[in-house]
Amino acid sequence: MPVHISPSLAAAPQDRLGQVVIELETAGADSLHFDLEDGTFVPMMTLGTKMIADLRHVTRLPFDVHLMMVNPEWILADIIRFGANRVSVHYEACPYPRRVLRQIASLGAEAGITFNPGTPIPDLAYLSPYLSFIVILTTEPEVPDCPFLPEVLEKVRTGKQARGLEGIEWVVDGGLNPENLPQAVVAGADTAVIGRSVFKDGKILENMAALRKTLT
Image 1 (tube, rainbow, N blue to C red):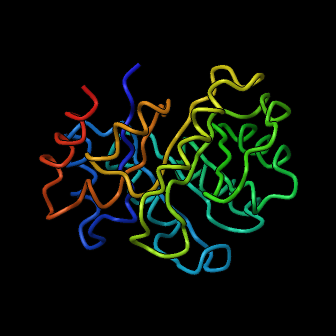
Image 2 (cartoon, rainbow, N blue to C red):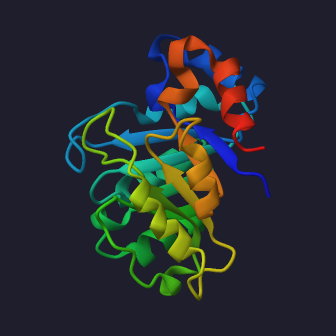
């Protein structure tokens, strides 16, 4: 199956997001990625929940929401009601990840679990009844413009062979560009969340084409 590209709207020009979403759909994006931060789990706050609701009518593309926050249970019902199709929470932020994933699935969205670069991946087979995808951050999430960490891709290589996780989608997120995207593909990534490289110099169509070219 071809690797999917999910542009990250946190890197998009915020003053014209509606038009940007239309351009991304035209350029062949497979989904749209939203980072929702609380300023505590990570020291930043970029996008808000209202943006999900406001953009939902603009496109039929799936909305992939990455919750970078502690105790994310309180926000799940709202963001799924607003239009999120997929929601991932951080393993580091959820003392009871199975319960949270079950809540996401019960609300009608695909449920994912995300790992920071420094977090080893434990046995996740017990999450499999509710787990649809696993996100591996390939940059540190604490500040923008952190470098790509190729060594983290070993988590994808190892995880693809783990028992009990057959059929799980593996997502890589952070610092990806046309130069290093092939490394993620070789490691076994199914989906790549890409920000700055999609929106570089405002040339969305050209940048998406360059990224797709590396996948052929």
